[in-house]
Amino acid sequence: MAVISAHCLHSPFSTPPLLLRSPFPSSPPRSKLAPISCSPSSSSPSPLMAPQSEDGRKRFMEFPYVSAPHRDLMVDLFSTMESRLGPYLLPCTLPPDVQYYHNQGSTALASLHIRSGLKPSPVLSLSLSLSLYIDFILGSWLHCKLPSGALNITSLSAYLSPSTDAPNFLMELIQSSPTSLVLILDLPPRKDLVLHSEYLQTFYEDTQIDEYRKILEKIPEVRPYSSSSLYIRSVVSPTAILVCIETEPGRTERMEEIVRDHVSAIAKEVLGIWLDRCACGGREMGEADRAHLAKRDRVFKSKTIEIDLGSSLPRLFGQEVATRVLGAMREVFSI
Image 1 (cartoon, rainbow, N blue to C red):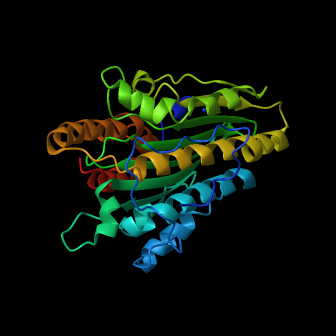
Image 2 (cartoon, rainbow, N blue to C red):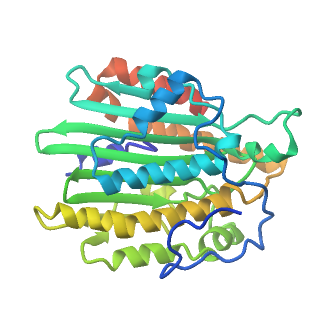
């Protein structure tokens, strides 16, 4: 839901190593960044987690309408993100009817889980300095019954605060049938790549992140995907993975194989790069630059609500539910 792309609703659309390192390129040493402490926590949920927050998390982590490899991937990614960032995150404070919601006929159901970053405070120890960088992490799933079948969307995104200009994280899987899947996987930039060539080199060239797209596109069932939204195409990075995976009719096992053996491995590698180089990279902004970045971030978040969700949620869930969910999201997004 970083989110549920409106255009997709119309389409038929240190830490332990993150799985394999070969044949995928390994990230070079982080010599250009000043690393800060960002080690895994002992457990995924925060010890401060309220009962209703924990119930909402359990429901979110079920991913009940997708295949086992798809579900395993989403659970693994979200758990990894929580494990690394957990000490710097607050419990989810969304109301229960926003953490899980549905339309009147229960033909559309969704789960939303958001954890905001700790707010900087003089009483926090220096070991919690990463709280400066985390705005919030967001995970969601949506299941909608359609005349042509079912639409399933699962997503995971992470937003950094204006204290750093490092890229955000975005992954979305949009499945319109058991044999058709759109993957969006990217580290969306937060600076102009033409004006800031060092930014391009640090996050996209030195990490060799473009190699993952090339590897995935060598699979016969994979082809490039072009969003119908000009806005979506304008905010992703030049190394964004936007692909459509289509297997032969009835070959659901082949789709599961691709997700398990290829998509999963690549998504975990990209998340690893984001955690090491962006969330935990120690790249801090000065006060003057923070104001400009904060303005850009507000525009980006506002457009996410307006373009991605403003029209799709009322259509799927009705105006009352949509108003409740969007209102809660605007509060978290601070817009």
